[in-house]
Length: 84
Image 1 (tube, helix red, strand yellow):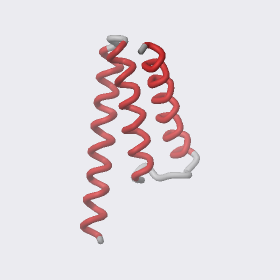
Image 2: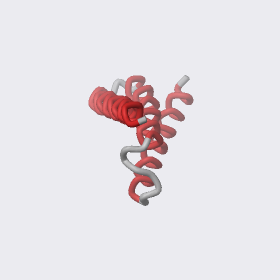
Image 3: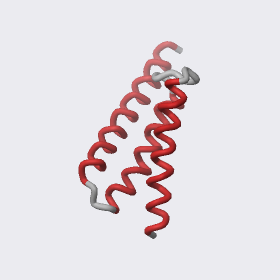
């Protein structure tokens, strides 16, 4: 179990850094579904790791990060439906 939790933590970190790198390189937009999905997925993986290790401050940060990603994804989806 411990190995899977560590893999989740490293994968989550990689995914969030990938999202940030793509955004910084202007390969994706901060409003894009891909950017939000990468952040949501990465934060979920990091939540698994931080809760397992009982690291409450980073777990809280990742729950907030997750909430922002879900809200932004929902908002952009709603705007697309209204425009379409």
